[in-house]
Length: 205
Image 1: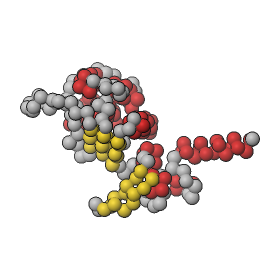
Image 2 (image 1 turned 180 degrees about the vertical axis):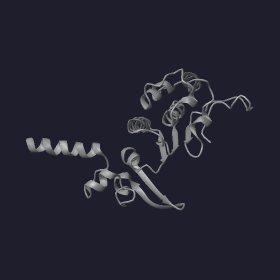
Image 3 (image 1 turned 45 degrees about the vertical axis):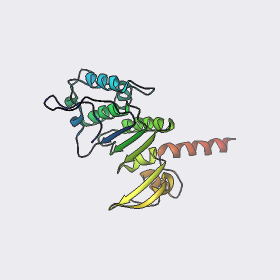
Image 4 (image 1 turned 90 degrees about the horizontal axis):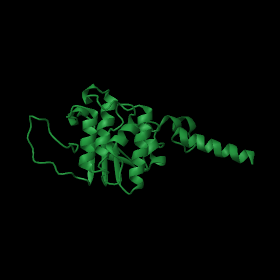
């Protein structure tokens, strides 16, 4: 189960001891509300920041503002949309700045802008030397985020290699941009527009 700080009031457990080496978030089948116990968004974020001590990384408040800006801090977590709940849980988990991040279907319920922000946050973690492993069926997110892709079927590895090679090797896994522009080696809109801009600039010289 994902690491979380406290149990509901009716449960008992040993005193919490923060673990900073890893964060694990599994969005399925557990709903985000299973990990949200306090009475407001602000209380959840304050608790997360107090426990993680914001050791050189972004605070839970800052991460949530990037993923889902504009949420009223006074809102009860159960009154948030499903995407907002997921963003709140991701902010809580990622605020620990763990050395290893394991995420299972983290984009479920996120809109395009939130996915783009999650990509940037994971890129930042990877740039800091942290290991990031994501299990997902969202090939568009994979194309924007992953360096290496492992494709599995029925418990067996069927492909393993650089994202640019693996995701375009099968029409089933290729993102829309790769399908439209095949055989050109572009996976995302950003890659295609950057290449087009460079080609245009070269023609103008």
